[in-house]
Image 1 (spheres, helix red, strand yellow):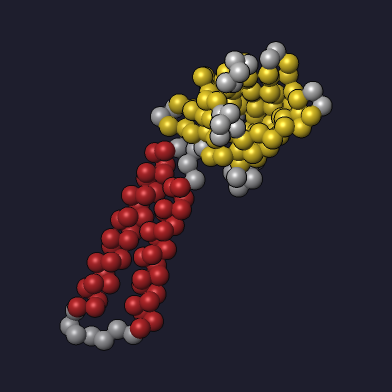
Image 2 (cartoon, rainbow, N blue to C red; image 1 turned 180 degrees about the vertical axis):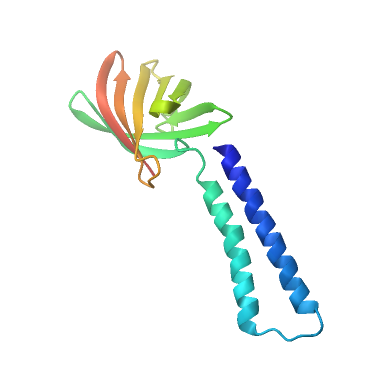
Length: 162
């Protein structure tokens, strides 16, 4: 996936470079006057190609980002925030950022099934694990839904990516 993004970056960079060269050649060649519309159109195409590639590249891996939702523990709904990063085939994460945050001690991705599992230890030494499946992978509002296990008890949970 990263290779595809790099390829599109290179492609957009090459297009922008060619368009800039052509624009420069037209502006300086033979003293020909260019219409303002032509200059604006050329610059628009160049900027669209450049910024379009940047916007596509910012999305990153589908797990990367901030996820918000809740888990229902013993009949009480608890807010849940998970921040995940994916770099070089490694998943790292932070649960409930702030003073009571705790980091993943281990995390794995079953890529063919888009199932992620992570474990952590709270500041109160309570073991926490979750296993969830990623739904709506290509959508902006993709979500993880699965099982949250805390102190040996399992509960359903769902978090949506911001």
